[in-house]
Length: 506
RNA sequence: GUCUCCUUAGCUCAGCUGGUAGAGCAAUUCACUUUUAAUGAAUGGGCCUUAGGUUCGAAUCCUAAAGGGGACACCA
Image (tube, rainbow, N blue to C red; front, side, top):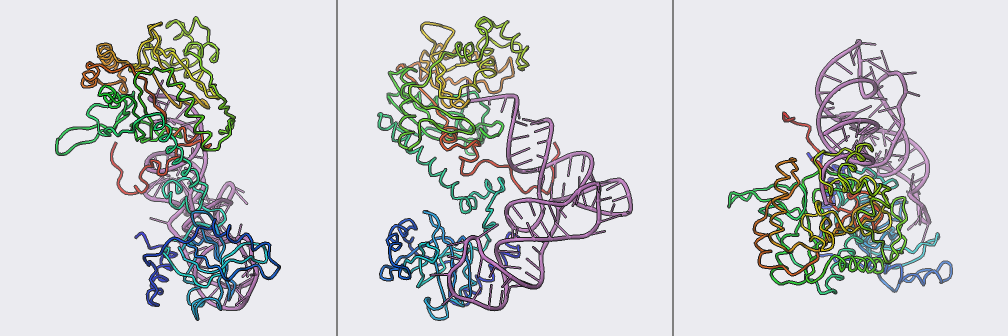
C-alpha cells in the first residue's frame, strides 16, 4: 500500500484530528498571498527604525506557501515558508493568535504543509524581516514528509522520478526550467519578428522521414495501420513551402528510438524553420543573429562558462568548410581526406571502427567525428558538407561533391544543422532510391524511406528554400551550463522502477 | 549494447579482513515567548534492492537479475 509508511500514517492521523476539530485540511478558494519578494521590499524601511521598534502593525500582509522549516520554542514558533519567490520567515505565538489556536495547532501544522499566514512585518533580534502572524491557516495538508532539510534530495534517480520533490527541495532546478521556458519564448518572438509563421505538423507519420533515425512504431486501431512517431517535421514543413508559405517554423517534439545518454532522450524538442527565396548563407546569418538576440535578452555574457570550458560567442562565428576543418582543425593530410582508400587506411591506422564499403563522403564524416568535432569549442559554422551524407540538401553549383549545408558546433557538440533545400524532384527521387538501396545493402536501418508523396509535392515546384534545425534541449544545456539533458527536461525518460515480479524469457 | 561504480531507516550517510544494524536530520513525548540546520532530555523506527550460492553464521564473499550514476559504442 502506498500510504503504509509509518510517517505517512502519523500524518494521516493528524488529518483525522483536524477534521474532528472542524478544520478542513484541504480547503478551497484560498487566494495566493502577496509574494515574499514584495513583502521583503515593503518591509525594508523597518531596518531603519529604532531598536525595539522595528515593526509596523498598521500594514497587514498575507503570505502563502509551503513550510520548509519549523522551530517550535514552547509558546512561540518560527517557521520558514517557501513561495514562488523564495523563503520567508514567519513568527507565531500563543498570545497573538486566536484563543487556544496555538496549542491546538502547533503540532498539526508541520513541515511540508502549505499554509496561509496573515500578520504584520517586523525585524527580529538577528535582523531578519519576518511576518508576525495574527492568523495562521492550513491551506493544504502534506501527508508525505519532505526529505531532510539540510542535505535535501540528492539522489539523482529520485530527483528525476519525483521532479516535483526536486523542485520543492532544490529551487535552483526550477530556475533552470524557468530559463528554458524563457529561451523557447524568445526564440518564438525572434522568428515571429522576422516574419515567420509558427505551424504544427503531424506527430503520427505514415512514413518516417526528414532524418536518419529509427522511429517508434504505433498502431492506429480504427484504420488498422502502423504509424510512426515523427523523427523530424522537415518534409511536412517543406510541403508548406510548396503550398506558398514563405517562412514557417515549428518548435515541437521529435521521437527517436535509440540509446539514451546524457545528450539523448527518446523524445526531444527541435526548432525547425524553412525560409523561401533564401539559401544556407542566409541561415548562417540569421542563426548568428538569433544567438546574439538570446544572449542579450537572457543577460548572458559573451564568454560563457560551460562545464570546464569557456565559450566565446563574439560575433562573427568562425566559418570553415568541412574539408578544411578535417585538414586544419583535425590535422589530417589533405590527400588523405580526399581519397577513399587513404582515408580508410588512415582511419584503421587510428583505431576508428569503419565499414569497408563506405563512400568518400561517409569516410570524411568518420574523419570529422574522430578528429574535428571535439575541438570545436567556440561557435563554429562548418560548411560545404559531403553530398553523400546530405540526402536532403541541394548540391553546390560550384562543386558537385558538396552540399550547400552547414552545421553549427559549440562546445564540441552539434547545435544546429541547416542547408539550401533540394528542390529538384527527380534528384530527390533518385536520392531516396539510393537511401533505400543503402538500407538493403548495408542493413542501415536508419537510412531513409521513399516518400513518394513528398516527391510529388516537390514536383509541383518548391521555391528555392533554406531550412534549419536547432536542438532546443542541447541549446538549453549550453545556456544553463548543464551537462546532462536530463537536467533540462522536466520529466526525463526513465525505465519503469518496480519490476521485482516476473522475469520474461529473452 | 559494453565496461565500471552504486543501491543500508522518510532523507543524507557510516558499517574494516564474515559474528546477527549505526549516526545526523525527520517522527513521537517532555521542557522552552525572537529562533536561523534552534536547543536540551527520553522513546520508537530496518524485506540492509531482488533471487540464488558459499559458510556453523552473510548488509559484508560469489553468481545472476532490476534500477540508477559515470564512461564508451550506436545515434546527428
